[in-house]
Amino acid sequence: MKRLLVALPAVAVLAAVAIPLAGTGAAKTKMPGMSMPGMSMPGMSMPTVAEAAAAHSHAVELHRSVVHVKIMNFAFMPAHLVVSKGTRVVWTNEDSDPHTVTSNRPAFASQAIVTGAKYTLMARRTGNFPYHCQIHPFMHGTLVVQG
Image 1 (cartoon, rainbow, N blue to C red):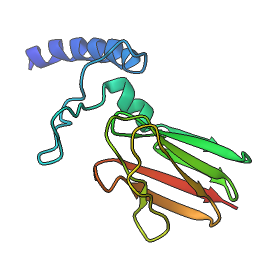
Image 2: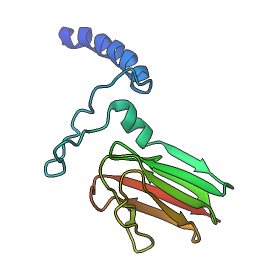
Image 3: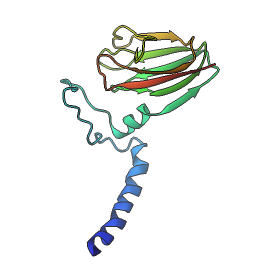
């Protein structure tokens, strides 16, 4: 029990130091536990801690005519996007592999978007639209369209 009580403050100090570094780009280690059996391909790298944090960011872009989403490091950035009805959303593939933007329910679907290409969607219907990459099913995003 004494060993546990001595170890707990050391763990707290390590966590306090590591957490601020995760978002600075200083930590370029790969995410632990991110291997996905059957989902990796030769030459495919998993995102770093900072890249994964950016991919899971939220963006609220209301009352804008055009909003951009990057496809980079096998992630949609931002992964959760809120826009107004009538906004044009443009996904640009900045990855070396092709990707798709495919809604989880029949609402929208792109063809394979090659490196440097774009997919554009006019947000005409309100609602929550979870989507994924059909080629890499572990890639997810959500588009929320407000009235």
